[in-house]
Image (tube, rainbow, N blue to C red; front, side):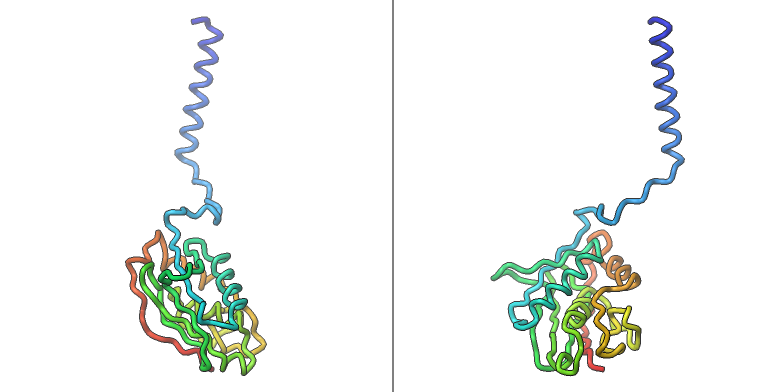
Length: 193
């Protein structure tokens, strides 16, 4: 082998060795939030066919959770299929079964018009009650920045977005798709003031 080719080959080998050694000692680059492993995403279906008048609020509440939590995906159930989250409109106070609901399990969300008639925001109500289904209890009293503070911040509160602690708790409950191993709590939480 000519000396110049040997020198290039040796230089390339040294570069590869140096790159491998550097990679072995370097901290791995953090994965972007959008790079969540698709296999670890838990898909939960909801049925809002009995929640007439709440469609826009439910859509916005579901979008809030889907935009803020990476390992749980809420999708509308196809007609005639079983949904893990049953959403219904009622005349009472909003209430929901405390989760985390697991795939194949079932919880109930009641979106009560009594809260709306007193001035509470429909989208906040829907997102809050869905939060119960995902395993979040009430945090009353609490500030408007806490979605799970429910009615305690008063009727002027319109926040329908979970805060960092609420997001982290849901992410933890569904980590690695393990929600299927954790049954729903089963308690019904009524969100009256």
